[in-house]
Image 1 (cartoon, helix red, strand yellow):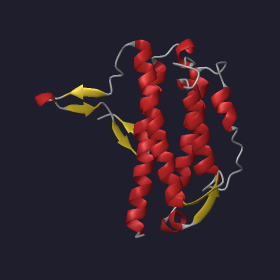
Image 2: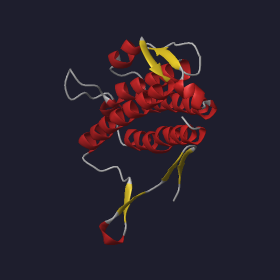
Image 3: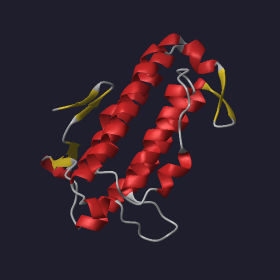
Length: 182
């Protein structure tokens, strides 16, 4: 893979994780009470709290440990077993730390690292597959968290400002280093 394409992929991955998806989760969690953070629509579903803990664990396992070489200390079952006892601020602190640590790893990767094979969570994947998995997985669960926030509050999350002609514009600009005011 050409170096410029690898860099563009890594920069866009950081933008999604830190500049787009994480701010959406932060805004959604700010609307939830502690009770709503741990609400589950049924026994087969996860709460927003579970999903945030799960994302923090997944990002840490796949990028920080898997690609970055840190010890894998993930306790996946605990992410789903939690039914409370962790405040939204602590959930977000764990998510922020995992995403920031992962983005620091992504800043150091290159085309060679993306092409290299890794064993992560018993999967034989390239670095590119690992990053792609984390970003798509993060996006999927972000949508679930946003749905829970809207379902529990009955309100929108204010991500978009209306523009002339009925077009909507995101209320921040996603960048690899985090959201910026437009």
